[in-house]
Length: 113
Image (tube, rainbow, N blue to C red):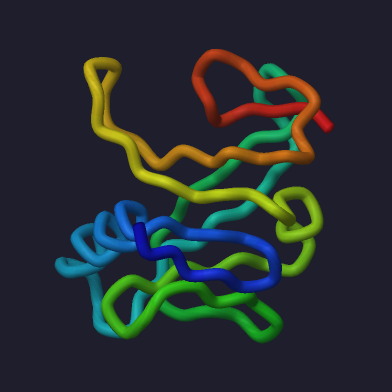
């Protein structure tokens, strides 16, 4: 499996392929922004938003078709993480395997540090 690495965050080939599919119908130059916000059932939650452009200081993963942006503050919470896309009986979603998380909820979008 091919993986792209930036600042100790890994995006799998499956994740990048799905990002490219999502962005295909968006405005040229759009990014999928992954951020960490306070909230959720475990204290922090991942947020996935389509944004028109990356912001100054963002960490960029991907290529011209699959553009992921991570802000530096969120990066502190997910260093060493793997971003994947899964499609199984439970549904399809981006999944983040975060080695910094000490607990997470069943939904997979909320975690504690």
